Image 1: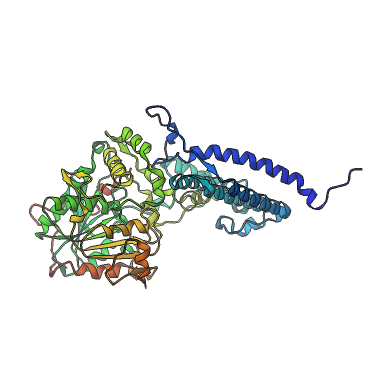
Image 2: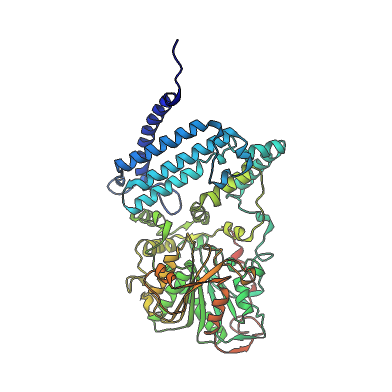
Amino acid sequence: MKQQATGADAFAPFQQALSEGWNKALESFQQSAAQGASAFNVTGGTPLWQIPQAGGMPELPKISIDPEKLQSIQQQYVADATELWRQGFAAKPEGDRRFASDAWGSNPLSAFSAAVYLLNGRTLLNMADAIDADEKTKARLRFAVEQWMAASSPSNSLAFNAEAQKKAIDTQGESIAKGIQNLLHDVKQGHLSMTDESAFEVGRNVATTEGAVVFENELFQLLEYKPLTAKVYERPFLLVPPCINKYYILDLQPENSLIRYANEQGHRVFVVSWRNPDESLANATWDDYIENAAIKAIHTVQDLSGSKQVNVLGFCVGGTILSTALAVLAARGEKPAASVTLLTTFLDFSDTGILDIFVDEPMVAYREMQLGKGGLLPGMDLASTFSFLRPNDLVWNYVVGNYLKGETPPPFDLLYWNSDATNLPGPFYTWYLRNTYHENKLAKPNAVTVCGEKIDLGKIDIPAYIYGSREDHIVPIGGAYASTQLLPGKKRFVMGASGHIAGVINPPAKKKRSHWIRDDGKFPKTQAEWLAGATEQPGSWWTDWAQWLKGHAGKQVPAPKAYGDGKKYKAIEPAPGRYVKARA
């Protein structure tokens, strides 16, 4: 009779199977790595290796792994997998909030599947880090692995999601029925629900600050807001938001509205409300947006207010557009701005963070071929791309909640705004893509021509307030700080806590988060060096900015009693206007 194996011998077949599985996984990893490393374009559409190009298909990057690193990863994998096998169904997934509920702990099969998933994910990430390749290829590969990990989580499957199974039992199947209803609803509306969109309406309970449209053309409406103080500063204040989103991120609710806050501080406030492009704007260019929107808005505010200078603010790509416009005007001998505020804005695109993995010459050339001569980039394409930068938080979290658990996401004004996507004209988008993200020409004096003028940001010699968010994944803090090295005027840089939106929309009354200030007037080359001499301040940066802006606003004068100037510029329609209500 054959004696039963005991001790370490009992695991020999298992370890042999692990070794065979490891070799197959390594082969698959190496094959997919070469494709995955070049598989990115800015909207998550056609993989680059499927894009026809002159001379045939693009050459895939050469990828290899140091044998010693690979052996170390393999040994760790076998050891961890063996330990999991020893634990069996007593294994517990740890360190991941997707598996933190008691339901996972009380379901041995689900818990074991989650523990195996986490082990495989750690191993693949270690392999990606061990790749012998250039940094961009490694970043792309790690991004591909992270996307795979997010999509393949057992929490995304009803067969393994212990929480969803428990809820289905507790509700006698009602959660599954509701999940199917949610899925059908989202298919009909064309995007994943992140909030209860039925709870909001632009002009009713978001974008409600009182005002009027006082000018419009084919690209934008100019909104003027009703003064909230008896006197206003003589220099009006113009805000230029990003055109890839709608302006009301700056006017969500009265208690978190930067527009209303500026109004309460005694400024005469104007805002550019971009038109959501349709086919009539399919040929609009970067020059059009500079000349006929940003510059036109500045000149209009000057004209109707009678003020020679205005204070201006740009947010994200709105700040890039605004700064380009100021450089064009400087080249023409004009100095219409008394100060400029830039919020999470790129002027120097050397450090674009994770977005860098999407941009290279083949991708840019493909987009130019596709959209450079005309067409529209659908707003939902860009929205999807930005969501997949944080897939667990902004994609799969809602897939699980909406469809597997049958939950309706709660009302949240910021996520409603985030779902209100806008299109972009193809020629505008492709110019921006090549000349900023890919070739970084705005940061190089006279390297690019806009509206017939050579662009030199060094000619914007005015006071500048530059803000960056510490945890921003769209405009990394180093990218925001880099503007201090380009603008020659007197500057103030402030770093806020949190990310691209939450860091900016942080009203003082909430008493949340903090910000960092350095008062010695020094701007070393890097943000890390700057931070070493900065001090942390509790609460919102808004109060610091308001005090700074007050110093550039001039004397106070009686507030106007009507919108516009009563002659050439009159109220066209109440704010927020019809442009912002057009859906993509």
